[in-house]
Image 1 (cartoon, rainbow, N blue to C red):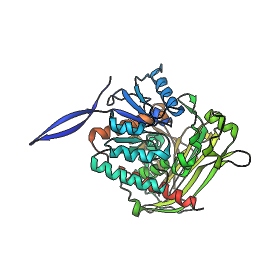
Image 2 (spheres, rainbow, N blue to C red):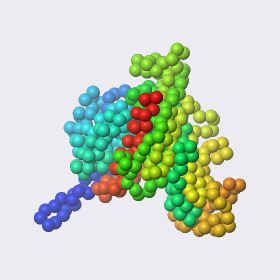
Image 3 (cartoon, one colour):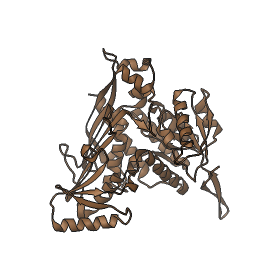
Image 4 (cartoon, rainbow, N blue to C red):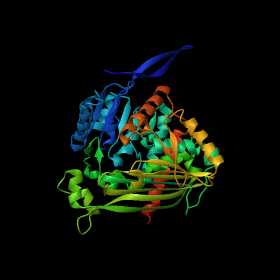
Length: 449
């Protein structure tokens, strides 16, 4: 059994003794494959026994099947031991038994915010998949949860995997180099200073197999509308890249300009292909059209101003990606000296690629850019430039190109480091609140239309 510890200081007189407390995970009501991806790797800080509390059913079984597959892998096998409780009182049982100290959440988003609140009230740390909230009411609950967590010295944190994509890391790093990027422009609503767009797919492969979606994934009352779901990552990246290390005050620093949502149609045949169910459940029938297509409000767009900077984010869900492609991401940061652009289209073979396009090209600019790349290459050896007609592409060695699934290990390691230090950077909590304020207010604005 692997056990490592975070530390609790206990004071006796003038002496501080350090008591060790093992990190033990609890997986609560797993309904999304992200819950399993947290356990695709082992961590020396974490006990190999994981306590699972959920109702018996397909969601739970799919989760356990993935853990078993990771344990049986021939490449990097894990050795998790799942201790499962399946009574209808699973939440009350978890809260009372207290067999672990970190609750991992990834599942039905309609229930998640209440799970978060009850977990911190009971004294658990919480490591939650996005989104933590899907509407304005949930945002008020989240504020309460963070206040309780602060009082009880607990760490409540969401899983922001996209911070660990190498092109995003380098885009952020280059934006802080004033000699090549200049200053982030303020932009306008017509031409935002920052634009982030992502395209996702209902039918997709995870860990080498087609993922089976639970039927409730298509119910926006349970999963959340697209404007509050995947957009969470994009709003987070705007804050993380444009204002590194800065606190965002949602009451004063954010103004929404416009927001809209629209649907994706899922036919009855596609519903069965996705869910492996032959019958559409009653809770989805309110979304059916005359041809029995399910209208899923999965797409969204937000235009807003953050600390004086115009930003635009959008997410689109298609049913299935064309052969050889997958989810894609586009991002541009407009500086006074250059634009930093991530593209992931056919020209890039659907792999994210980073470009630097100067406002005014010159030999002096190119020399300064090379100095910056040489400095970055000390941390990321092999990074280099390739000139093109608009500027340069940043060529990145393969060892830095981790996929989405590997990013779960990176963000989990970050969270475990916060646990070991008993704290997070001062900007993390206010910026999580700012992020969910943005998405839930956008959902409210879009729903009025």
